[in-house]
Amino acid sequence: MKNITILGSTGSIGTNALKVIEAKKEKFKVIAMSAYSNLELFKEQVEKFNPTYLCIGSEKNAKILRELYPEKIICFGDEGLKAMGALEEADIVLTAISGAIGIEATVEAIKKEKRIALANKETMVAAGEYINKLLQKYPKAEIIPVDSEHSALFQSMQGNRKEEIKNLIITASGGPFRGKSLKELEEVTIEQALKHPNWSMGKKITIDSSTLVNKGLEVIEAHMLFGIGYENIEVLVHPQSIIHSMVEFVDNSIIAQMGAPDMKLPIQYAFTYPKRENSRVLERLSLKTLTELTFSQVDNKVFKGVELAFQAGKTGKTMPCVFNSANEVAVELFLEGKIKFLEIYEIIERAMKFHKVREMDSLEVIKDVDKETRKWVYSNYARD
Ligand code: NDP
Ligand code: MG
Image 1: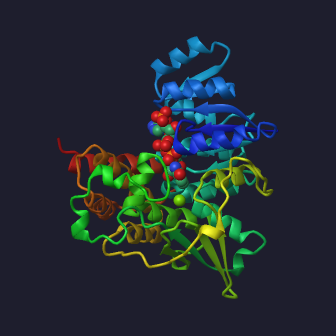
Image 2 (image 1 turned 90 degrees about the vertical axis):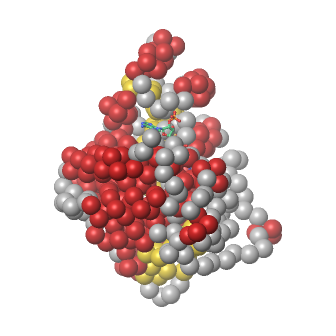
Image 3 (image 1 turned 60 degrees about the horizontal axis):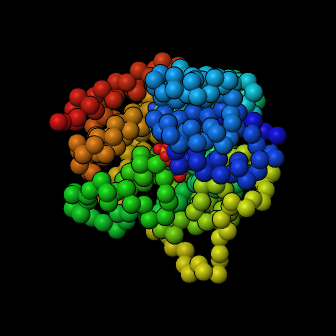
C-alpha cells in the first residue's frame, strides 16, 4: 500500500489522480489532500477518500472543515501547503497545483526524500537549478514527471544510458490557434483561447497551450529534469497528440511513446514506476481508427513563447523564473480581460529584458525575483 498526498486535488490533474487511485484502492491510499477555493468539491472528495490531513486556501474555509471533520488535521494557506509537502507518512507527493506557488511544498517533499509525482511544471521552470542542487543533497528523493511529454521522454529513456541520448523531441498539439497569423491573433478572445482541441485542463495551462508558452515551459522543464542541453531539445508540432514525445539516440534510432491523450496514464505511471499496471480507467489507443500522424515546425514568428523560453533557459540562473512569473501574471491579466492576447509575449519579453540575472543559490532569491517580476508586470500592465 502506497500513501499519497495530493496537492491540488480539486483541479484537472487532481481529479484525474483520484480516478486512478479509486481504481486501485488496494494499492493506493490518499492520506492528505489540498484544495484552494473549491470547498464543495473538496468536501465530496474528503467524504469519499477519507484522508487524515486536509489543507485549504483560507482560514475561513479551514474553520468550516474543522467543524465538519473534528477528527482530521486541517491547515490552510501557503504555510499549510508547505506542511502538506513535509508529511512523514507519505510515500508519494503529487504536485498538481498550478503555478510557482507549488515550489515550497515540493522543496519540503524533497527534504523528506519522497517520490514527487510532478505535474506542477512551473516549479521546475522557476526553481529548477535550486531543486536540482537540493536533489543532490537528498539523493533518496526522486522526481517522476507527470507532464505527458516528460513522462513520454522518461518512458522512452528507460533501459538506455544518458550518454546515448542525442536529442529530446517534444511534441506540441499547436493549440487552438495553429496556422493563424499574428494579425489574426490580435483580437483573440478569452473563450477562443480556452478551447483546446485535444486536452481538457485547468484554465492557466489551457491559455499557456494557446500561446505555446506551455511548450516553452516544457523545454525548460525537460532541461531541468533530464540534464540535456538546450541545443539538443527540439519542439515539433504534432496536432493529433498521440505521440507524446520522443528521444533520439546516438545511433539515430528514435523511441516515441504513444497513447490516448489522457493524463491518467502518466499520473499512474508516476505512481507505479518502475512497474506498469493495467487499470480499468486508462483509455486505450485504437490504432485502427488512427488515420494519420503528422509533424511540422513551430511558427516562431507568431508563437514567440518557445523561442523566449529557449532564451530564458540558455541564460539560466534566475531568468527562467522571470519567464515563468511574467507569464503567470500575464495569463491572469488576460483572463481578467485586462490585456490582449499578444501582450502576453510582450510582457514576458519586456520583463526578461528588465531583469538583472542573479545566481539561484537560495529559495529567498527565487521568492524575491518572483515578487519583483510580478510587481513589475502589475505596475506596467494592470490597467482598470
Ligand atoms: P487546475 O487549475 O485545474 O487546478 C489547480 C489546483 O491547484 C486546484 O486544486 C486549485 O484549487 C489549486 N490551487 C490554485 N491556486 C492555488 C493556490 N494559490 N494555493 C494552493 N492551491 C491552489 O490546474 P491543472 O490541474 O490543469 O494543472 C495543475 C498543474 O499541472 C499545472 O502546473 C499544470 O501546468 C500541470 N499540468 C496539467 C495538465 C493537465 O492536463 N491539466 C497536463 C500537464 C501538466 P481550487 O480548485 O480548489 O481553487
Ligand atoms: Mg504537457
